[in-house]
Image (cartoon, rainbow, N blue to C red; front, side, top):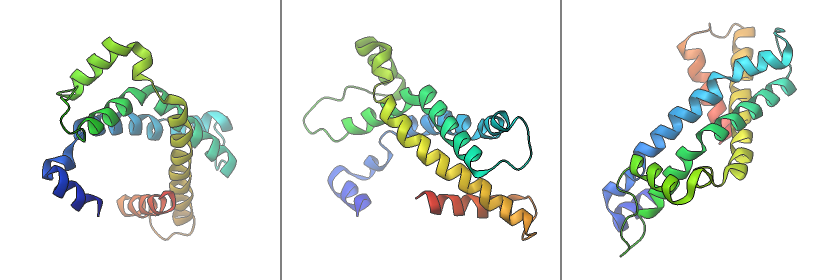
Length: 167
């Protein structure tokens, strides 16, 4: 319904509003939250094997919060770039993603680029925690019960399950 309404009212190009900013956000955010998860988990356990669920939850929340703390400007630009597309009769403030970063910094300073960080940390820490911990637990169960080996299909099933639970 949302897609058809957007195409009907704003045109097919509206589906790609903020795409570059969104991709930049995902690259920054995902590389931090996923890339640091195992390291943070090992840090909390002192390197012990088979950490408990609480340690995994703590590691997921920590890396989610770290990712947002670093990547918040990408979220600000993505949201603003998408929102400006819906304004009828108003000149666009940003012509491109990099110009948006520049103008926000010039007009609002660093605080403007990190606007909304605290609520975003809360939301993304919980989502990240749910996604990564669920993925971790599903993959561990698959390997423990010899249902699959540690390969692409195993990662796909684990990711699909984690995405389902997180959603």
